[in-house]
Length: 213
Length: 306
Image (cartoon, rainbow over all chains, first blue to last red; front, top):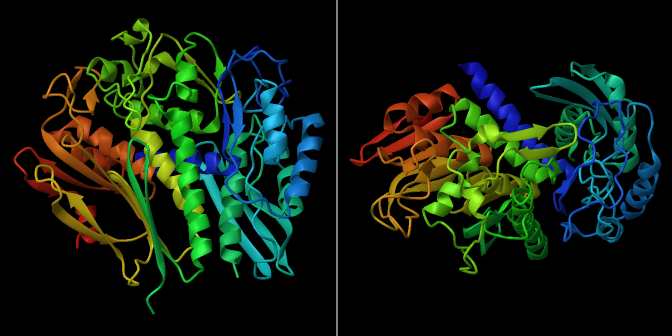
């Protein structure tokens, strides 16, 4: 019965990581216009205000704004227009201010749109130099990665093995690049590849914990 | 060296939540961390409460038959609840809300306000199979009108999120009424000591654990009784609409509070005969107190005892 324990642990672990990595955003559930979407192929176009009356979203900002504020908002801006092949809309971070403004428009796609409150990245320059590895798996497969720290900062992230159901191109090179750019393991959910994204976040978190000075 | 420590207690998640935080940091650092931890918990509550009309859970339940995109917290809570339902063949069931309402578990703990739900939410035939999830869209559809109750997972999730906010400290203990999570060292630099509530003598402990870096959750029949029927407490078997009573309480030790809480609730519902086997099957440690106050435990639990 050993399998049950492992499966349960990974399902629960993934859930906690998912929520933590996404940050806390309070969006009301909203009706969907289109329910058939092909994972990883069909970037979900934000539905125009179709939310139920009273659908409101409020941002929850658990951490004081840090120096990453700027880069998160700029990312926020780019990700709304990003629709690269096989990279549906990012679950992008944004500052509290921009979040509430997007959210108030009644944007209906809480999972794919950009109205996500993001906790700003951790302080930079807090890691030991070196190469640190992280591994994560869930019922949809696993991945491992190596994080290179140089001068106390995340200099490079390389996915060293990948056994997820989705093609690696769904998250690579986007997520490693973002991790370097944002200096954090808290990445944005790639819709249609959530399981890969969570694994990436979990593995990054692990590697950075090892790198803690 | 004795580390410095801060403690704070708040009313949250339908219970009293207190956090002890240990670390040789400034008071301000500890206070900010506590604030983050409590905020994370409040956030889960605001999303997943069955008592709060403005929660995402209630909004979802107002729209049966429609695919609704929901916040991650709600989606993940429902996902893990369904996992437990499958595993226990429906003994654990997050669609139990309507049944709980019928038994009078209808008041918001903080405001005392009565919860109003549409009458068709009282359908007694709903089960977890009436929930559909769309992984890609992060959406949920209720096939029938029903009222979700995520009490057995959302509180655990809240504790796990709070724990992550505090991970950098040398030690902490989160106690959320039955859900405990301990990490690192206690204020004396030792392992944490966790008491297990005596099921019939209020304020007394029936057993003690000495451990760290785990979650410990106890599901018991002693805490909340139905205002309508003294035989009914808050952990209700969906199949029979009654409360399991061959166990007085069941404690599970796991790496995550959400897992410990869900498994202890499920084991409690399975009853004295099957609880231990179930906890063994999922490779966790458990301690069980029968209606005759007899204590049994899984082999794996012995190492945690004080």
